[in-house]
Amino acid sequence: MKFAYRLLHPKVAFLLVTKHEERTNIMTLAWHTPVEYDVLAIAIDRENYSYELLSKSKEFTLNVLPINRLDVIWKAGTMSGRDVDKISELNIKLERGVKIETPHIEDAIAFLECAVRDELKLKEHSLIVAKIVYAWADGRYFEETWKEGCGVPMHVGKRYFTTNLKHYEV
Image (cartoon, rainbow, N blue to C red; front, top):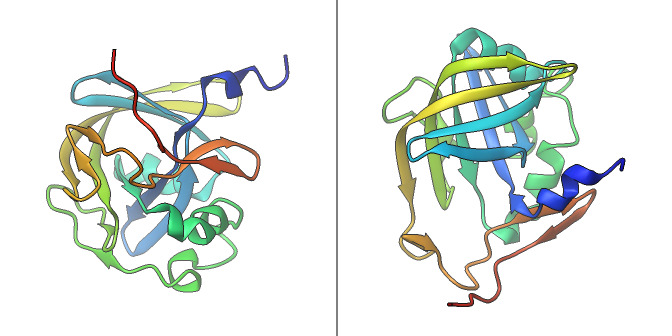
């Protein structure tokens, strides 16, 4: 089944920020999973410019913008950082990292700062295992879990996104 991986979606659509020396890039990333309470894994194509920076710095941030910034989320995943300065092009403001050198997005509604622990190289992608060294979320959107209807963007596949409209309790 060509799109079997989409059975695992929707997933929060993060903006991955990577930085090495004076070069900084962003890309949209929805291939991620928790591994332990303070460890996560992301899958990233080794051809991506973001992978090049991440593999040198060994750190990154994952940032959540609200659904009303879907245009930025989409464009960050469809342009190459080798060809264009996406941060300038998309008018993204960055703030200095709290525990790491890599910045986070100033108006993110949540972000994770991560330090790479391990890498598993597959055919085209690498599975990057990272320790979460700092986490922050805006209380208007997140309190132990994402709040109902807060508008966190989740990627379904292709150009399709959804949000967490309704919670159900068992």
